[in-house]
Picture 1 (tube, rainbow, N blue to C red):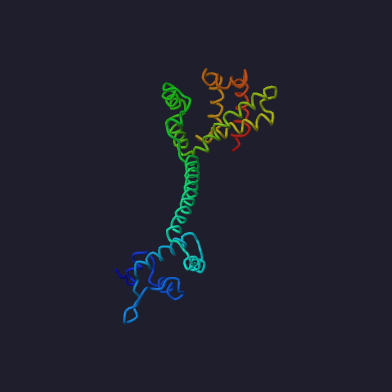
Picture 2 (cartoon, one colour):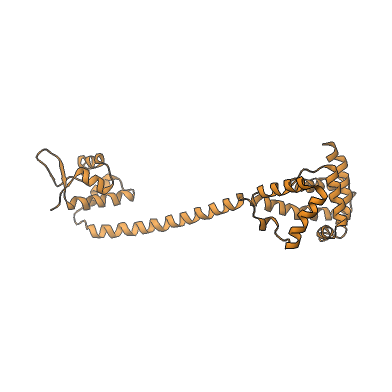
Length: 253
């Protein structure tokens, strides 16, 4: 019969020697024998009992309840092990669900904070438009303005980009509903301020730049078509409203 010292058993079971001493003191796990000098000696039956103790501990049973269960007349170690396995399987399923929930949450959070890819940045544009817009912007506003715009856009999170896209749909729609008002009307100017704030997310907006954008919305067929889809005549309405904002708000900043 193989005999183990307290140090050997502690190493095999992954517990401390102090723990085994405590189990001995409370008579939860007493060694099968001792040497002449009083050193503890553990047999195979002790190893099996310690295994049961550790399984019960893993299931959060108090030590006193573990002792009562193990010392119960008719205790069947095989049935106990089967019960441990069933309980661990239930816990494993629960932990699997928790890990799946955590993974989904991490994915959602990282998607919201992850910076944009080139495909997302130019979503909805054809290859020709992707090449034409930056080139035309350089010709109109200069290299620095385009560099600044691209740099700011790439630093946006996906959440910020989605909010920007949502604002880009809502503001023109609301402006289209105000075309019966004067371009300088407070309600119109409030919406124009939101429009200007969207532009300012990409580059610094001066009065000259903002007036130039209004002119471009009217002259460039692509921009005119974009705004006209919200309401016929919207591009022509926005031009004087943007000029008013440039003169009365931007010029005073």
